[in-house]
Amino acid sequence: MPTGARRVPPRALLDPARLLTYDALRAVDTDDAYLNLVLPRLLTERSISGRDAAFATELASGTARMQGAYDVVLDECVSGGVQSLQPAVLTALRLGCHQLLSMRVSSYAAVTTTVELVRAAVGERPVRLVNAVLRRVSERSFDDWVGQCSPDRVIDPVGHLAIRHSHPRWIVQALLDSLSSLEETEAALAADNVAAPVTLVVRPGVSTVEELFAQGGGERGRWSPYAVRLDGGDPGGIPQVRTARAGVQDEGSQLAALTLARAEVVGRDRHWLDMCAGPGGKAALLTGLPAEREAVLIAGDRQVHRARLVRQALRAYSTTPPVVAADGTQPAWAADTFDRVLVDAPCSGLGALRRRPEARWRRQADDLDGLVALQTALLASALSAVRPGGAVVYATCSPHRAETRGVVEAVLAQRTDVREEDAQALLADVPDLGPGPSAQLWPHRHGTDAMFVSVLRRTAS
Image 1 (cartoon, rainbow, N blue to C red):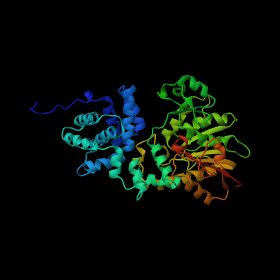
Image 2 (cartoon, rainbow, N blue to C red):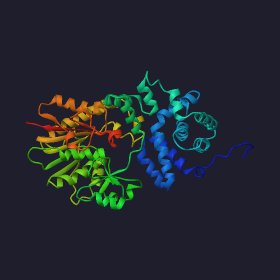
Image 3 (cartoon, one colour):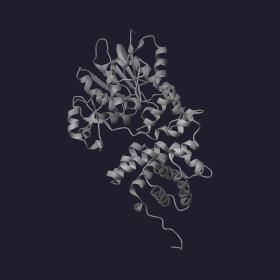
Image 4 (tube, rainbow, N blue to C red):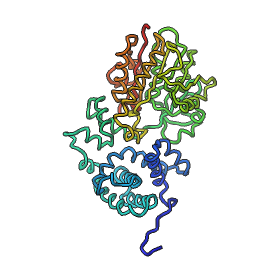
């Protein structure tokens, strides 16, 4: 080795938790991977558990959530701005920023481990840059950097909140439009940056909350009678979850399904449809409920692989309900067939940003045009599929007005045989659901994803 040359550390000798986090975030950036899927897989493959796994999870999720704010800070510290950096180097710098500005990691450890990570993953050339940039980042606290880099809170409150809470500006504006209060908008943004609790759901007829307590511990959910919140640990290790007698499902999603079951229908009540059923959580909850009334649920999804996931979710039931691969906008069923229909429409996912931290950076405001057109078509199709006297529940995991009230109002304007009913009356135990008759859940109010629910009834043909 030449005199003065530095040895590049083998990847195997680097800190395993930090290396795993780096590899996970690179997969998110280069392969469009989902962090909530790639991170558990890497933890298992590399046998990382306990405190190291908790550290890697916080580092990966926190870095993904806060990357917008960190990029603003790095833009101040890098000559030429973040656009001049190699993507692999930028990922490492974001990891360093999260340790320096948002975790209880010493400046020395954060800088040194990030430098060694870059040396091994990228090479020697950017090492001095990374070292210098992170040392400059460490000179101020996160609040001080926000004060220096963000717009004035009074002059441009949306721009200020976008940097402080690391959300794209258009999402901040959408939340403000829905909440009409800067203070509550800030509370909603802060809630997006707190990891969601692990919530389980028992499948009626094949398991009970009491059985789940006995195996996995936890506590009852706040709103759903089928919900259990875990204190920690891997839900995959619980027997009921392994056998699909229970599953992981946010309480907001559970309430959307329960709203369909609670809605009043006039006349017969034997045929239910979950139109956009994949990956199967709501269908699995709903399958046990119509069985108690001698009714049958049909689950459909346009994508074949998602229909397979629905079948997997339903495998605990002795009699598996029909699952079909069908496009809800071009239905395989006749009009006026069903007594109840659930439309859990594809959406922006803005209501689940706390559990999908990278999603806020993938979505663009322009994406809503296509999504709203699809949501409107699905709801219109559902209203044709339900018979007069039957009920349709439109649900979407978004608080954006275009995807919620906008869709419902557009469809109501097109039809004279539909009326909207009081969804909030079907969720009477849940407070602060916003202006009716629809219901809007929020992480900061209810501890759930920001699920929207509307109940529509077909009247005379």
